[in-house]
Length: 467
Image (cartoon, rainbow, N blue to C red; front, side):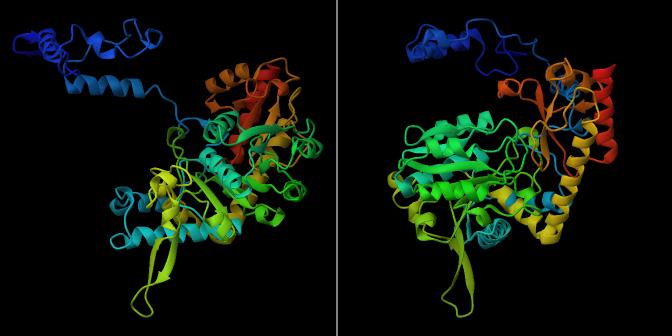
């Protein structure tokens, strides 16, 4: 392609050398590198990028990109047993239908006087989530679970004036980094040990580490490693006796069969909405929620939007709008906001509301029962393989479980590579994040897995290990 007789890169504007010289002269610069003078030398990429020659037409480019994309293997092509915070659940068609509607898909913040439908939809979502977790208040969702957990801890710190938070040691290491980053330097994060046999929190370590300076104790149920933490009331009691707040992170798909954390003393509940009708989307279908009791000390510390219902000037008529808007960073006192909260994942909140209204209490119970039955079957069958322990921890699991391969003489990395050849995405390799576990993988089973899928996994692992 040529412009004015000069060779030009088809995708990079102003790439003709003469044009660049003219622009640099106008700016009073000698070279393009002068534009980056403020960037430290050690941060600059000084090699030539390994890029192919540019295609000369849109059609050629499209064909090349499609050829490259066909190399991807998705969960439609392979049986997927990966979880670890982004889980493959069935998404009812109505969830996509509603979330794809233009009035929801293209809407941004909105105002009460021009966005009645969106505000009502989010109010209904908040009501459904609050009912699911047996709390009173739920927020318009944040980006993801890690942000929701970090914000919950910051809320607790503002309520108690504590400067540290105790977090269970089985937490996802990526989530832990986000929490630390978000809480620094206001709240120091300290880990609580876990029992090597059960995976559950070491209560003696909790008692030793908690103090008057502790703002919150954070644990998850089910845990990141899949087992159910049945010491919830004891943990909350220890927190409350020290003047700290009990925060529990949850997978909402478990609440059809597990008691909500409020029943064992939780003050703040957080988690991810992704299991509730949201596709994995290359890991980007995340949406964090926070829920509390309807008490002023909690409500006024939410940094995110809360929607409520109130009577209008017309008798018998009601409308939907923001609650205590001034407490938010986008309210009247921006610089005095509790935290900065920008764009939120409101669309996923509406989607989760559609899912919960479709499922209802019985549907959520059947979902949880289905998942638990399948995960227990998978653990039992994996236990039959020589050198394999279907569940590393002596605890009850929900949909995820740690498979122990230490007795096989093979690494989880080797096993996963062989599983890929058989059309299976194996479990997450835990050997780097949890080296104390050795060669273990975090496997996930949900309602989308048929018995034949689990049997194929077991037979494949058996063949890999036993030959």
